[in-house]
Every structure is written in structure tokens, then in C-alpha cells.
Image 1 (cartoon, helix red, strand yellow):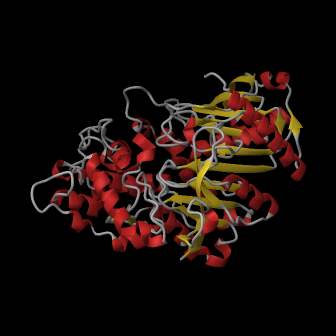
Image 2 (cartoon, one colour):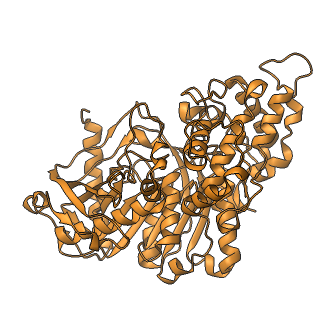
Image 3 (spheres, one colour):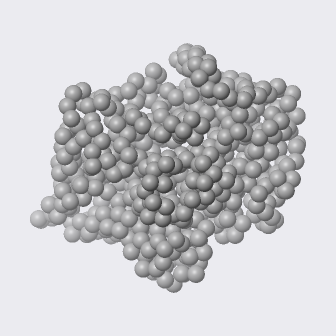
Length: 561
């Protein structure tokens, strides 16, 4: 893509910002020459360098990449994805880790080594079912669009495809039929790549990183919490946005909620808008301001009554049939799994209300993207179906029934309980004992978007409550922060969604400065990325209430409980 003059201006501003940061932070830096970069090609990293059983790693290529200016990709499906940030000169390292099972796919990885290193590293998490190499050159989760990425700040960054590669014409869950590939997706690949990346840093710079961070959203958020739970000594700070931590519950909820739409239960986009407008009419002004954002979605549960939308005559776009009302009630209800899974979990929390018709996200937001789709659930799922049905039905077949032809209409978790518990123990990042992560000085920031229908934000809230119950509120507040973003969908659309969370995490880890006074901003996705409105980023269980003044300024709101 052609580099714009705007991008060049952004790069210039970035250099100024970085120069200012360098004067404020005492860091141990290291330089990397082009010859040192290319010399990494062909290097072998022995399996003994990895802290868990693993095959050896090989570096397939290492090339020096010139600095580049920021550009805008208007075709990207998510707001943050439209930003292709400025990058410094760096060494792009591509490699793979061999499996122990000859039938298991390689774990591919990318490590980006800046020419001027600040002694730190950031591992990026993936998304969906992975299977695509994470380049670790993009914005971190929830970052402001005008913020420099970690690589531009001097961090080594790295990511992985989690140990399998998507193939055209195959469902993305197919890999789960291989035991090692499933374990890699669950947790092992992120640990293996972390240790290999540290070995690469030692080879390139002559030393290991002083601080290690992990950032991830959705599946990547689950990966971040997995690292805190399974490998608590590996990271100093973790940022997890909209994490899909109650994974087994989520896939079964996706199946249940999809089945609720079969037949007369399916709703057209007009019905999603109908419900969305009714939710706003019931709940929008409860925070003191009518701005199309439901700031208190918990309170909205008692204010919104779907019964008022029931058709009194024939089915129409301006009312809901009995089957459609039942479908909405299903979505708004927790799923009782009827069995106990890993860490005593027995249910998946409800979703909604708010964010049903997040229009600004296009095909990636609201009910249409995640639940209803543009066509009723098909068997097998088709692209026109909601993503939750596509993901949930496929996960049931490949992860739990382990039969690509399994009939999801007749599936019952009780009939596959040993396997369900085995997968739950692998995939569900719900272990509340973070004492080891706390003991090593780790810090964790969680962000839940309250208009999310890809997963329930209340799953993360319930997890935080479980950690508090296990360790005590006084202990937890010293190393965990849980924030919520009202009206924001899974990918960051619908309301102010961006905040300086990663810099806040670093300051908390390295300076002991507890995050405070953070703001959520909504920005244009073009330079200079002007802020159109802002809200305070409230720590759960508080939410922003309008107290007067400029309706687009964060200072006009206060976090209230």
C-alpha cells in the first residue's frame, strides 16, 4: 500500500514522542546491526531451551526491515484494524517449532527485533481459533489509534499461529482432532514461543529481556489469563481485553443461542434494530444523558421488558413473535450446563442488553455479526450465519463430540462428559488462584466491553469475583484491575473504547504507579485521529454518570456505583 504524507507526519511525531519517553525512563538499551540480524537465519534452538516438553525450533529467515510510516487500510473489518501503524527499522524473524508428534503441525512464530531495543518484550495473543500467524506489529488491544505500537517504542514483539494453520475449505476447528495441536492451542504454544523468543533475544542482543508483557483480546485475552494461571513466572504484566475465558461454557452457549433461532425464532436485521431501540428507550437516559449509550447495562436488565415487543397480530418487522421473544429471553438467560467443569464452573452467564444493533461496526458488531447473522442457522453453518453459531456448532463437533458429522440438534454435554471435562481442563482459563502470579510481582489489567455478543462480559466479571473470593479484595486490588466499557462491542465499536491501558500497565509494573484517571475515547479512523467523545474508564462495578457540562468530555462524568 502506498505510504501517505499523513503517515510521514505521524512518523515524525512518533520520533518526537519516543525521544521524550527516552528522557523519562531509565532503561538498558541494546543495538542490533543488519549483519547480526541476517546471521540468525538457519539458527537452531534446542528443545532444552523451552520450559516444557517441545520439539526444537529453527529460524527460517531473518531480514532487516526498513522503517515505515503509518497508513490507513479502509477495507479492514474492525476500527483498530484500519490503522497500519508506523514501525521502526527492525529485524523480522520467522521460524517454527517442531512437534513431538510427527503428525502435529509446526508452531510458527514471528519475532520482531528493533534496531534499538529498550530491554523489554511484548507477546501478542491471537483471535478466534487462531491458525493465522500473529505478526505482533499492530496496535495493542484498546489502544488509542494515535499511540505508537510497542515495536515503535523499542520493545521486542512476537506472536504465533498457536500451532496449526487454517486451510481453505476446512472448518477452523479441524485441528482439534490432533491431540498435540489442541494442547498447543490451549496453552503450550504460547509458552513454547515465549521461551524461544527469549532465546532469540539472547542470541541477538546478548541478554534476556528485563521485563516481559503479554497483550491479547478475545482468544488472545484468554491466552493472557492462561499464562497468568499456568505459567505465572513468565510475565511481569498482562493486558486481557474481552477474554473468552469460560471457553467450554461459551461454545455450548453459542450452540444453545443458535438453536433458539432455528425456525420461527430467527430475527431479521430489522428485529435487531427494534430490540436495540427499545433497550435505548428503556435505559439510555438512566445515566443522566441520552446519547445512545447504555452506561448501566446491569440496571438495564430490570428496566427493559421484551414482552412489550410481542406481536399482537401477524408477524412483522415492528414486533416479535412468540418464538422470537423466547429467543431473546434465551440470550438474556444464563446457560445451566447441568454438569461441573474445570474449577467448579457449572454455567455460562447471560448476554445483553445493549449493543444489539451496533451499526458502526458493520459486519463485525451487534447481533447480526455474532448471533442472528443474515440467514437462519444452517446445518452445517454457512457464512451468512452468526459467528457464535459457526464457532459453537463447529467446536461441539470437533472439540467435544470429536466427530465432524455429529448431529448438533441431538447433542447433550452429558453424553460426552469425560471429553467435555478434558477439553474444559485444557481450554477454560477460569482457575481463580493467581497467588503465584501475584507473588512474582505480576500485574493484570482486564477490560470487558459491555455491548459484547461474541462472548459475555459477565464471564470476566464472574472470574474477577472468583479471584477476589479466593485471595481477598485487599490482595486482589494490589495487582488486578477490572474495567468495563459501556456500549462497546467485541471489536471496539459503538461507544468510546480506546484507552492508554498498555502504558498504564507498564507504569504499574515498573514504577509501582497504580492506574488512575484513565479515559475511554472514541476517535476518527483517519489522521489526526481526532477524539469525538470521551468517558472516564470506570473500574468495576462503577459506571459513568453524567453530571453536567460538555457531553463529549470525560470530565463531565463521574464513576458511580
